[in-house]
Image (cartoon, rainbow, N blue to C red; front, side, top):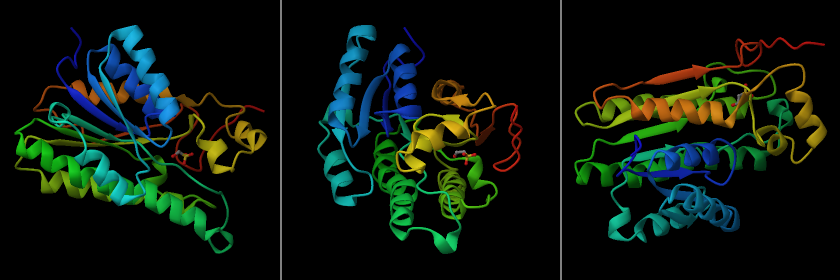
Length: 258
Ligand code: 8X3
């Protein structure tokens, strides 16, 4: 019996990084999982592993959260026994590009705004009403970023999308204040996943340089926090968690050993 036995948890961006680590933690503690991501193959592989390791029941939804029609179709296709979603982890997201706003690539902006903001909205809009209808003690966990607290140079659009995640989390918490649903915004600093590789469009050297000289957070550090906030007693709402590597103070203040 784990902390999450009998619970159904949907994680977006479940095929890698923080999402994948969350799925593993929840599975180890007895949850049923709905994995949501673009890569069917990666999710199927994860689902099989979880079944072997923990006997986890999971459902895989191949979805690009940027596409509202796809998101609606996927959630509406869930069989009844999968619609009692206790926890939604809005993790899908990322950064694309690190350059001055006036030199940035508008297609990078579209992808970040559509995934980090609109994808989170689409899933939340569908799943919170399902929680309410079924009288669940639900929980929405958004993966924000310290980038949402203050902008840093060359990151304006990414930072703006994560500031939006902070405001959406705060607003949703207010809108649900008379309901048994908790809302948490987790704001990690430097976390070594494929985040920088994606940000630099596949440039592995540039990505590796981001984490040199510092011990960054790992996906599993963040997943442990997600597990912690979601397993607090139902009357305890952890609104926000800001977490950085010990040698990072803000998005822009970082100490690196030479
Ligand atoms: C990722 C954290 O500090 O690289 O969202 O912007 S940071």
